[in-house]
Length: 277
Image (cartoon, rainbow, N blue to C red; front, side, top):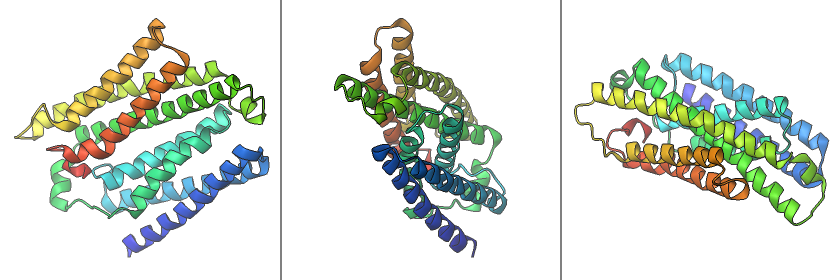
């Protein structure tokens, strides 16, 4: 009964999510403020429903839900949606919510229509520890920071293209200036890198304590360290002015593609990240 109710709730959220993004797209094309406002309220309803589901799931499983890819995707989508609403209200950067929630909608759709994978009680007991939960939660939050950084870089490239082509339309004035977009992308990388580093430290500590057959050359570990190095290089380039503007934005977009590969593909090749698969 619980699973059927949750499935229907998710299907309803997907429909509302899709309508909201459609309205944001109309606003993007036609500068329709009514569409923008209605889309925001629909998105707020989706957030309320997602939050209700999150609490119901926590009550049902009696733990924080991040141990499987089914749970991790949902938490990822929920944090993205939460931050998009906060950013929209505090920073007033137009189109940010639209682009962030395209990512959120894709994540939510994968979560909703993929086969549900619930861990067994024995597996849950084996995996649950404060160290592990903090490790996974911090890793997901670092991915969220990198996702938002990607959105600001994408908006930077769009703004740069409009300026270069001298298209002085309404979209240009609603995208905000290039310097602010670049700064926001940089700040989010500054948040994501230490968070990912701490997550790796905690994850390695948990693995060394709990796992009998632990390998440093595991694909997930290697992929995470590659991510850490790439984003550290991006921050270094920004600080030393070795790369800036459009080239740095392109590098940041490419780095996010590696985030997606590491989250979806590399996790499945891992020898001990089996709760993600």
